[in-house]
Image (cartoon, rainbow, N blue to C red):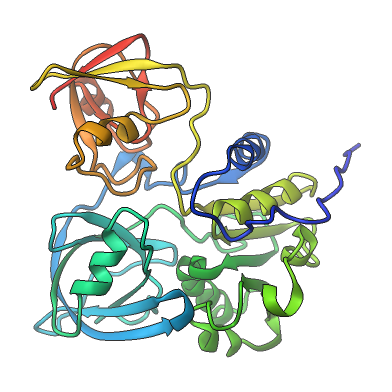
Length: 369
């Protein structure tokens, strides 16, 4: 017999995220992940550790403001000679090589049937890592941009084609609509039984609202200013057995959805995060930077990347989730506790590690930095 836990009457106050991580929410999210069928950005990477690093020289052919109150813009990218671009599937993303050298991932939110352009959307985050500011301030119509990919770490699995579910329910929060929109478009074209809840602070803050509302009554748009903060029941209406739930949004929203799904039998949850995952079962260790002899102490609840950035702010990184390889470094001494999903056995044997998620299986690592 299945014991149902009550769905929380109200979600966390900062449902759509806040400036600093909330430790309780991080722990809550971790527990939810370990007790359900979880298909996250991390563990649904392309099989076998394969990463498509092809580089494409493209041009910004159109730039549009999609949500003025949250400063979201979309960029339409195309080849200068108009040639066809590599195909992609819903849930895929591109790596953008920004003029400064930063590498940032953005979900493809256009139409996979369009073989001549890619569309991405970027929300300006003033206190973020600087990538979104650079996109907003330097990429205009006519700007050249080199991209890598596309590749997919959040695949959409159709009912009857790898998923045991009979129907699909989508949940998106704000800019989290970007990977979900192509999934919705595909489900609609193929006649899949689907529904969606799109949530945000107000109608002026959520991008692509006109495109979403064109799908009619299958979509429920909930905004805080009109309806109040949504409960888990509001985000998952009529979700029952044999349903696949695809959710993308801030950590607090995905945690709320995850906790509710735990109490629902035969419901699949597929989710993509906005932020780095919390450290699970971490132990403190030291990192020695071989080129200078500096020693960095890594606490049990923080990543090596976070601490290395304090002394080496120019250290390359991007996804912070163990799939893009940007922060790959070579270990010269010590045993690595690998927590990524992309490095091959040969790479690991050669001492490679990803600073953003992997740790030390011991007390000290010496890195070629």
